[in-house]
Image: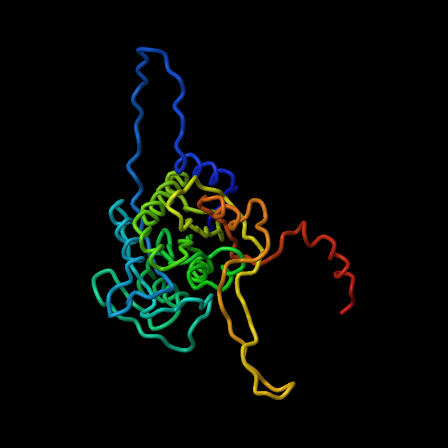
Length: 308
């Protein structure tokens, strides 16, 4: 069982690594003693997504390829286990009872199911003897912030990893178009690898994240990024349901359509949406444990007095 660490060291580590620091003033002629730097930790990483390994025309999806290449370039051992086809918006859905597993190229496996299926199959079929150090889900072309994250296949894959005691990160680009996200894929892949390196240094050989805790990263679609913020999920809505068609008679069944647009309302200070609006990268820690904060449930203690 891993020992949970406080969140503050994680926030401090990310701030120190991802935001330029200022060197302390030194006297002329000062020669600081050389310091030994440990070799970067080589991690075993499984990556997945919800857009599928196979893209339009049968080509591999470029976002996940960029992520894989960046992690491999940093010396990590990377295995891809992804849905065979686009599974966007499937959340934490698990296919029952069977899925098929294929191996289209070395170190790449595809699953005829959802992102959660891909993670579960990967952990059982490919990492049974030893779990990976980390699961990274993405890069998703389009933001997964505010309450839409609850329905995201990208985040759902990370949740499946956390349920199986494997640290996980979900990564998305808040591009307003797919092309805008694609233009940033290499930049965001490199940033994600920097986050992984920061977590590895902070872990000092242990688990990369506190037990049961994942990270949901959203990168601004704009080219000018001002920094990184550790955030919480904004509760504003992102999904739109609308009554679009009727059969003519009042009270008769009709058709409702779902669309996705930007969240409505005003972003809460310290939230993922607020950070993105300020041009900052949002990193939202999330807990696989759905239990509410005890401070928020204290007023419900009277329910314990109810007789069965």
